[in-house]
Image (cartoon, rainbow, N blue to C red; front, side):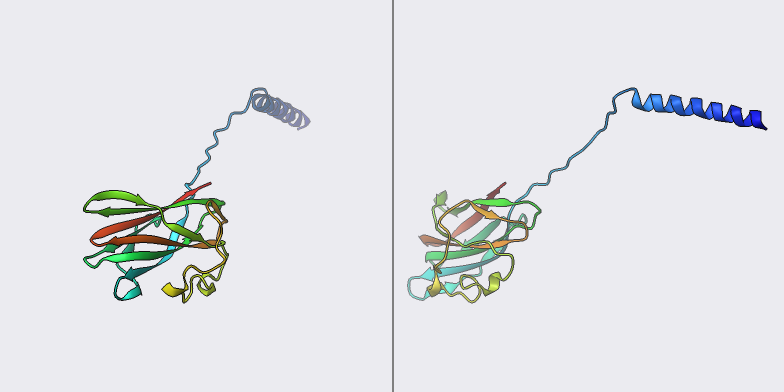
Amino acid sequence: MTNVFIVITLLLSILLVSVGYGLWSDSLKANVYIYMFPGYLEIGSWKVFAGYRCDGCLGYNLTYLSPSNDTLHILIGDRAIEYAWIGLVIENNNEVNIYLRDIEVKINDTSGDYNLTPISYLYEPVKTGVGYMPYWGGVKCSDLPVSGYLAWYPVLVKPGYKMVAWLYVELGLSNAEITVKIVSDY
């Protein structure tokens, strides 16, 4: 019985030494995959006020959001709009800090596509309570622009934060489509 125990111990020692040598004698190679998701900002909510020659400034609802939630489309019918206030709640629903680099406004009408340069009023990002801010909840066209806006782009939007941007554009046109696209970056 003692001989069997010695033989088993000897075989087990040889086996463990050979496995240990095999594992530690060469370099270890590991395949690691890192998946990066595209971080971007999204339009969570919007308001549009249209200024008419005779009726003043009224809420406007011929709008829709792109499937990627980064472009707002505003459809203008036969009635001419003199100017527009376009309000956006811009959200960072990702896990990384993202900068709002710009908001591009383009018009497509019978004469073609062209860019507009809006006057931008950007407000500090907040974690909660955008609806209670004086520049969003219950705001009327006559209230705009509300004081307290930031100087200019870029604006850092932390994860879980939202910010409000109001854009003022002079139009004087009808039968057109306005696209408002947010441009974000790390």
